[in-house]
Length: 114
Image (cartoon, rainbow, N blue to C red; front, side, top):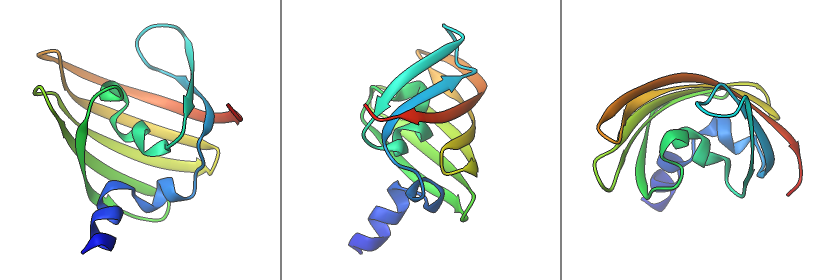
């Protein structure tokens, strides 16, 4: 049962990536954001990365995954992650945040260590 729980939280595509300094393009705000991530699974809930959310992996393949998540306080989302390389990801995410819809496509690249 524990193995199922771990697999449900961290899809295989993200198991091929490592934490570190990631550069994110396509998010609202600055053209490029840099984030130090200990765990790249937070990219699956990018809009709600500061919240405690429960993730469920709906589709899990070696180079792509679909994750649905719900957060304390009512936010939720659906994210599709595609791996270009272990250091480069395409992330499409949509859902509800602060009672409003969001939808955007991100490009995430690991650019170094924190």
